[in-house]
Length: 398
Image (cartoon, rainbow, N blue to C red; front, side, top):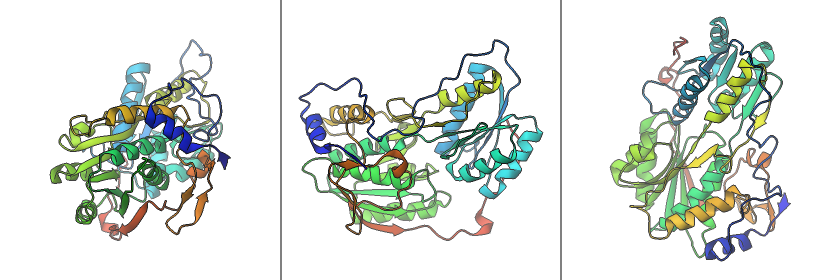
């Protein structure tokens, strides 16, 4: 843990009495190993053969998986920028990952992108077993000469989203629907909850409902329960946009993990968060072309624009929300307001972070507890049934 006077900083921000600092040279723990966005080394003027395969856990065709959508944007931008061939294998289960890797390599790919944090362990193993192939893993903390990993600081955006939600709730009850398999799920839930808590002079209760992305009835039941509890704003953090669209259908204000929130919930979206991995993916693909691939661990946040906020819905937000959100985003992105600053207690009232201290990024990724702002959690996830699983056709597509 490191020390910081968090509430002095928050008071300064809310009063808007001091100008925002343009930069901060000290390390606040929002970063970590390899926080820079890598741009590659000096390029060889003669590009080499490059073919990149993306392995997805969801479907490209239906467009409902926010992670697939994010990587598809990066894949297509890589093709436009570098002129190289890319392709993908969709609907891959974790147990099918190695089969997908084998097929991709056999088809001529020399770089493979594991586009789901659930693949991180399998990607690390595949990189060890295929030393002549380069790998990019989303969510893994390992890296090696042929494995580059990316862990975006999404919790920064979740914290700002929480602050915005707290400023806009009328019932003083905010809900969360989250898939337990999501990337850094405890970090995101807790960061959002801390953002809610840190709005001064507020007392807001939070309700967490777990629901699997793959079963829309689980999500529907979870949202309906939050409505019954009196929640007027809900964060949806899942690998399916059904929950976001359902909130819009119910007239429920929603904060979501999707870059296209205005399209998914045009009537009721407040804000949201998403990832921008285009630059990272282009850099790694360029490394294949010019033999400058760097096996590093990259952690970019709001400052690097690897993590972004969805544009605020000003027609829905209360007066003053934009100014407050913009100021908080600047403070967080410049490391002036550590997200996990103490005192933080968990739901068992155990002190996890003492006053004047804060958690560093590596600790945030290992969280397995919930902050005490959450007054109730329920599990709406039904048991997995083998017949419900969608198996990949393991066909390389472009």
